Image (cartoon, rainbow, N blue to C red; front, side, top):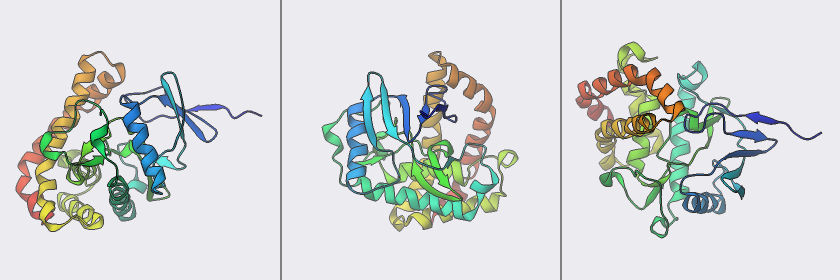
Length: 259
């Protein structure tokens, strides 16, 4: 019997357009497909097991290997709020960056808009490390998916994305943890990643620009008529504004937590 196609839910940009058939995932091709596929092949070549393998392309579709496990869709379920999940997500990001280090980005065209210039280095970042793009087996993060925004970035920028989602940097009324616990979780992310001391406060400084860059992408797509992003923005815009205000009000606390 042929395996049946199963829709994979969780994304916004490609809602209803991503399917799994057996061990393969069929999805719209990445916007900068040559660069993204070259990067994924690099990750495979250096033995990083936490990203999909490029199997084939067919017109506007890309066919990738399926990573077993479950995505941590927001709002985070209880199993994704554990210390194990938090530390393993930071550890996975570190392994990903270590595997990325040997790839030369200058030979390729990357998606636009790119991350802000001050946060771009020769490291290729994922640039979209939100819960729906992390795959877990049990409570352990084992994989990253959806490399559509991957491109020149930095550890600081990816860690800011991870921290916003996993501390998380939300207003008190929206957060699953106390304020003190959220600051402790921010510290734990940086500890588990092993970020050099000189770079830690840069992550705190990047949180607000990262927040604004992320939601500017959402608003732009919503204004352009993308139904998934329009619906998503309607659902999250009040919480997003509260989160932004919390980041501004707790800037000094976040810098202190990073030290």
